Image (cartoon, rainbow, N blue to C red; front, side, top):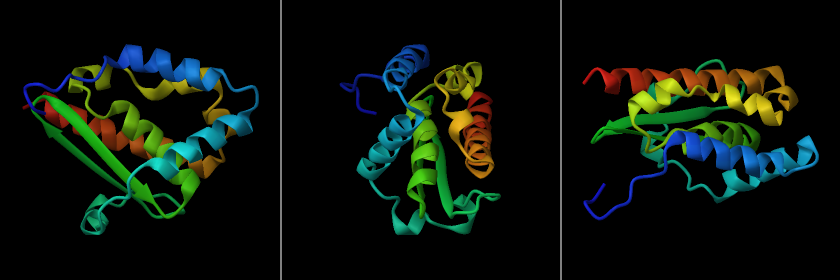
Length: 146
């Protein structure tokens, strides 16, 4: 991050904004459609990052997640060959990316239940959320010890 760059808002503010956005949809399908549309706008992960080391195990679709820490903040990128998996994983990656490790560790994605994200996903897609959160948390824990 350059000296002139403005740091992203704290996770609590991001959570409130995301909950307001997702809470504005009347039907679960509208929420899911919005998430998929967000995924379509996300840049694809570079081919050289789609390695076995970055592959998230336990998902029916191929899912790659790159987790890095730099200058006291964690950054996440993901991609999948499934739009819905890409949407669900991307939601967490976008939400937590740029946050300091302590903030990440203090705010697990449980708040998504408030707007019904978890309840309207298949068991496999809930598993994706869990696996992505495990990777994000592991990155934050490792960065917090540096």
